[in-house]
Length: 333
Image 1 (cartoon, one colour):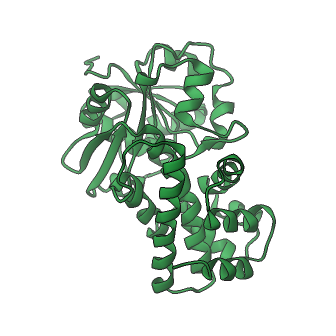
Image 2 (cartoon, one colour):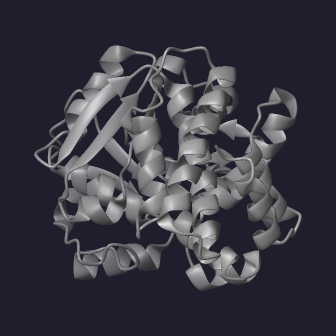
């Protein structure tokens, strides 16, 4: 196998964003490793040349992919592991792992938080699997998988405390339709990605309640300010919250038709229960879990976060969406 500066690349998951990342990596790498839990999905993928469950219009040369459902084999044979597992299932996926991760480069494309632990993913790998901080990377920025699949112009930010590591992986993903930049604000990118999912749910709820675009723009403006307050308390790293890794990701998640969190919020605003919305979507809305985790984290931080609290009250305390969001709207400026 021809190996670049990042060594052998292993994709961890089989969803739409994992599939889009595999597409990007294969623009530069001759071969990749790809871990999927289900053997039947692997068999269908090999037979048809496309992921049978996600981005089915995207075809792959499967002779360039080493598929496996054995997580230990996958980790053993990969140098860089790109985790794209939905955050609520990360711990469950890792239960069978016996191979050490400390010598691997870990890239998280998970825009969520590890439930129960209330840790961002890089912190979870650092504490639980002893991965050094300079080997932990994040992929941030506005990046719906469906648009990457269509070769639509996308801007990604690669975060790592080690500038050289960030640049090496940024170079790997960069191509004519993917523009990359680097950042050392790992914690800011991760928490920003969690919060923007919460705010996208809020935007969706307002949409479901038939508030107009004028108002939702005000809500997103207030959400940007709330995110800035959070990030300032979490880390004093110098950052510009209007950069695409923060505000860009927030905007696309609040407005895009591809946004699962916006869709989930819209259904809640229209009167669906949380459970019925989840069943009908048949997809993970990371913001549902992120809302509870960030609410609990904020019990210690004490950030002024009225949007987070309103969404938490609706999703977890079963407060009336109409009443809760009307009261929230009165606080906007």
